[in-house]
Image: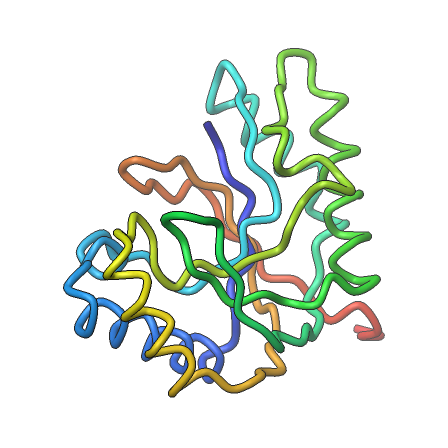
Length: 180
């Protein structure tokens, strides 16, 4: 499996990482911190037979990837194990998901994970994962006390393989309205 991931500006990363760290401390579930999972937004997950082909597909979408601002106003859960910060699925994120999917669906042996096929994709930034019932309650308390809506800037995109996380390529692009 390969992941297409968006990463955030330093301030957003720091704010979200603080919540991740506190969830780990308060709940005793250190999955996120032990595995060095930094705040990120996975835009697509797909299977491809070769890393070379995955890199080729990532290169094809490079001109479609650009910085922009997103609002992260809420918290959500994928019961029973995951708590996350939920960005608003605005026009930018919808078009980004659509553009990436358009490139991936034209890959000969590419299979896009069903949860990342537009419009089914639910944008989320995982704050706690593999949480038990008691751990989830502690995570809720942390986000209730600490979470504030965030205007986040996407600053880079990456192609990676999970388990263990292996970053294959990172792209930094200019803002959509940038004239340079």
